[in-house]
Image 1 (cartoon, protein in one colour):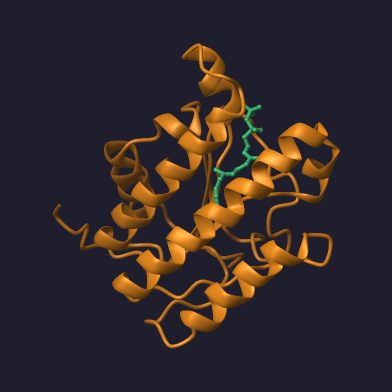
Image 2 (image 1 turned 135 degrees about the vertical axis):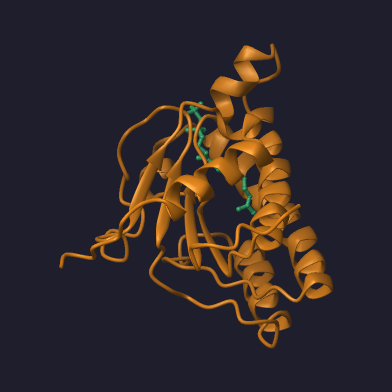
Length: 189
Ligand code: FPP
């Protein structure tokens, strides 16, 4: 892939929305949409890194998501536990640092341990940093931020796409990055 040389956002935030709608549209069990969403996350991490982005922050679980059915919450927690394990191995291989934001005290002890291990094992990796996302992308057609990084996002450029998260493509990411590079960022000036 060619790097987009002009103006690459240092940081992108992604609200990965539309997993269940994707599963329904494919006739799959609804919760399997989250698994497809996780696979997409692995792909997008790779594409963003290749394009020159330095940091990616994703919205995996909001406080409001605790109100979903016990079955779905439990499915998601199991998926997080498994996937963080895999993502940690990949992060060590690719020199990516993993940091979890937000309150983790309500999560079960086993999941908290996997998260702490991921942070500890990748602490020396690369230049990944907690920053102020220059660009926030929300998939699936919802046009709001839903509590995602409320103060860090004050001057972020926003992109809302109708694409369901598991169908998000490399072409669309590159087109969003190109669109970003053409925007005039005045940062309140
Ligand atoms: C929103 O789609 C998505 C979520 C609430 C969960 C997102 C989680 C993943 C993609 C798994 C990622 C794994 C890690 C380790 C970060 P939705 O369920 O609201 O879909 P809908 O809008 O179609 O109902």
